[in-house]
Length: 220
Length: 113
Image 1 (tube, each protein chain N blue to C red):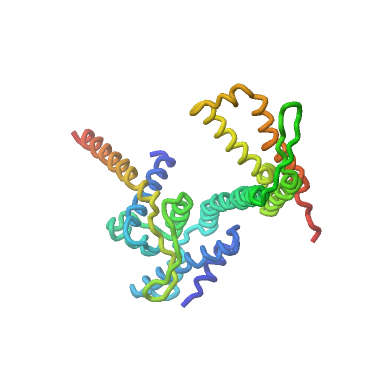
Image 2 (cartoon, rainbow over the protein chains, first blue to last red):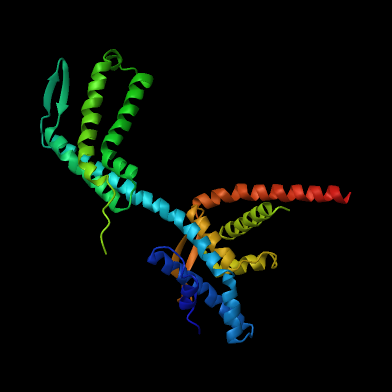
């Protein structure tokens, strides 16, 4: 019995995929050729002829490798986006929100800073820790090979989510159930946005900044 | 017929054949190729080179899913099954092809008249 795994691996040597993906593809195609070979042998065809005919199933092997690569690569692009954007973003978000919840649960009182008649509600320990959350998001994104934009978004993810929720709440307050206070006091609204989006975003970005540059190449 | 149209027809009919066949118990690649050949009386024949890029493409598009499993003889095979999205895709695809063949049939009828 020929070593089908070896025969397929040799013919698909140009396949540029991860070792795990390549192994799975080689195993699957080898299994197919083995079935074909057994079918031909059962029809009374000689061993060498059966091997040659089975291998003809691959037709143009380099072309087959390119077609498989194309089909699998897009899948990898999707995986890369998950690894370089969504996962780091979720880590950053979970850390930032977890810390804020912890402070609130322990009864920590925010510091009120008055700017004229406008209050800023500052959870100082949270703001101090936010650069670490931003750094974690950007670092994980860079480690997964994320481009600059993915690293920025992963670092700023908590602020982006808060912005999304604020937009949702605001549109509901204006359109669905008009909130008279918000409509009459737009300055309060701006202060709220500064308090919960701009300040956290600045802190997150501060932490993310060291990881926004491309990783240094190591000399080999 | 232009090559692009010919290849689209070939690809579309191959997709329909695979999805139709997988609208039943899960099958592995070699089985899929053999069943299609049997059921079409040899009119459609898949080789390794034509089958697997298509299966991987259908998998990437979420129309089929695959998992490794040992068959009755204890050999590991990668079994393919239709996903919910694949089932959803199959009905309109069948309609499109029925419409296409009916149109061709009408056209052939006219040309014979």
